[in-house]
Amino acid sequence: MAKFELKLPKMGESVAEATLTSWLKEVGDTIEADEAVLEIATDKVDSEVPSEVDGVLVEKLFEIDDVIQVGQTIAIIETDSDVASDTAPAAVEETPAAEKAVAAVEKTVTVAKDTVATPVISSEDRFYSPLVKNMAKEEGIAQEELDTISGTGKDGRVTKNDMLAYIESRDTQKQAPTTVAPQKATTPAPKVATSPVSVNGGDEIIEMTRMGKLIAHHMVASVQTSAHVQSFIEADVTNIWNWRKKVKDTFEKREGEKLTFTPIFMEAVAKAIRDFPMINISVDGDRIIKRKNINLGMAAALPDGNLIVPVIKNADQLNLVGMTKAVNDLAGRSREGKLKPDDTQGGTYTVTNVGTFGSIMGTPIINQPQVAILALGAIRKVPAVIETPDGDFIGIRMKMFLSHSYDHRVVNGALGGQFVKRVAEYLEAWDMNREI
Image (cartoon, rainbow, N blue to C red; front, side, top):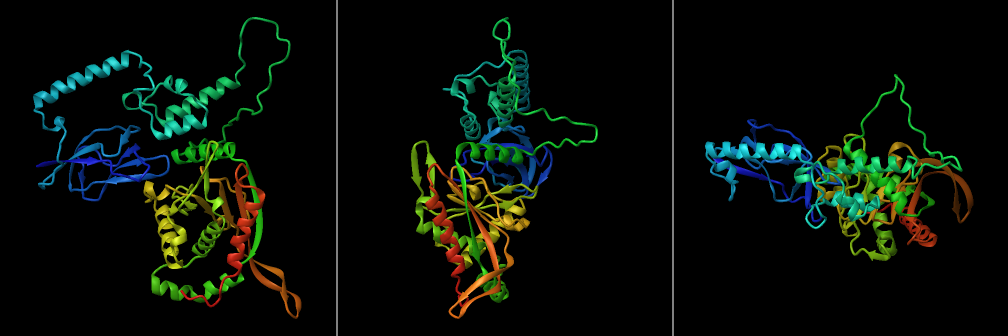
């Protein structure tokens, strides 16, 4: 028998840790290679951690809601093969007597923890995850205040739930009237703008999912950060509609991929960004960061109905076939809940297709730290004025609205309007004789 250490794998360039959300296997369960053992979550996406070997789970080293660093051992798997980790933890190799001694010590420590209040640890020694730091920054919580928050995670670490509970209690305290000293009130206390939500016997209370809470937090933070303005333009996509209808079957037979409208639109957006690179920026305080790569975020549906934004890296370097494969791959893995953390990192501009739900236009919220987002409306058959050398006449055309939301702190109306107009121009100039 050999002992194999199941470690938290590298999940992306900027992902250094993850939170354990659930164990899919229990101690004593048989595990096959590539079978999922546990689920983890970063601030972007949920993922499963599979086993690399066949064996039996003999030990769990972390509990639910613990924060795990990349490379740390999560569990021990006993396997019949000779494959074993280079360094097995000492606890696994200890004798039964030693194990009993360690268990006794751990029990004593646990009792001590239960009877003694957790001290406030200084910011120099206390660990905070990137998610907790971001939440503190967005809520305006200074380091001194953060150090006072009691943590329920491993070694007293502050978890996301600790932060949400603290923020909620802090907001409640802010709304509550403050009594300084007994004195006559000269003016009535100001009324709170929002009324408490009443619940009657017929109402159903539904707990928000972890992802839902994160999305809600990010949306509010984005509106508070960026000065949102919108520009709208209507594009005639009749040529694209007819061209796709003509080539889609041939394309699918040749490439094994369905040709949707999304990769065509993404190609036009990538071209427009090359023409207007100051749309491809981020804001860092008083500095503007001009992005070198054009990484297009693509809003996609998750199994629970929420939306996530996987990223097509270097989108301007892809031809239509490559763009189609990238779009279909990310959309498919989003629906199946199989996105990796790295799939959602590094976006510089986002596109969302509100037309999928029948909307003709929308006013999307910017995906921070980006400065703009484009909403694609539904394609509709409408009467339109068609100009010809022989005069104007009314005809039936396929049209759609493009809704461009941008951060008015750094993107003025001229740039925001010119950019979305250029996207429309690329779509309307589509060549009906284009080869695939």
